[in-house]
Length: 260
Image (tube, rainbow, N blue to C red; front, side):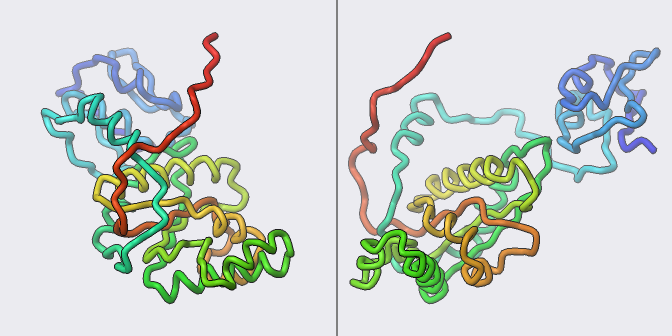
């Protein structure tokens, strides 16, 4: 049964919906209207509905999303470049958890990040509060200590330095199905969306590399995170309000590029 319905009374027959369909689900019929191809595989991306200039198309498998504003005030290239170039890994935070309302707004941005074939397979875990975050750091260190991989890091921890989550008030973790080939890429893209949305709200962010790696090796850490069955941790961020304000952009190596 077709999920896509076209109102032929208002359709302009411009073919835009067919042109933008990434899965070849639509074709132009003999009358010039778009129609769903039987046995095709729609990936529910919503391109066809979003591009229709006359609102002639509806899709039973998609929620009704709002229209974009008639005039979107996009940041200038200078503003966007300045914002992206000023992004820095922040490892010192104020002792104040990110509010539930703010985290919900950030996750709403992250869930709109692109995923392979629009699979949208990700699940999210948010840990908030110093005691809970500290427990994650401690469990991460338990594995590092037992593995004997880096005694120097264990010494830092024993001296009172949390190198794992840096005393961050809030941690967010992205998970993907264990058998999903594009989990790392999808999680990285979604976390980047979330990171930049957090930066735009004045929050400091740093990628939680130790936590991400050990979560795949240490079942007690996986349990502490409440990772859903069948899912694995593919990335995480620590975030909170800036404790210090930086005045210069991060230094980087010169660009290395091959023009072909």
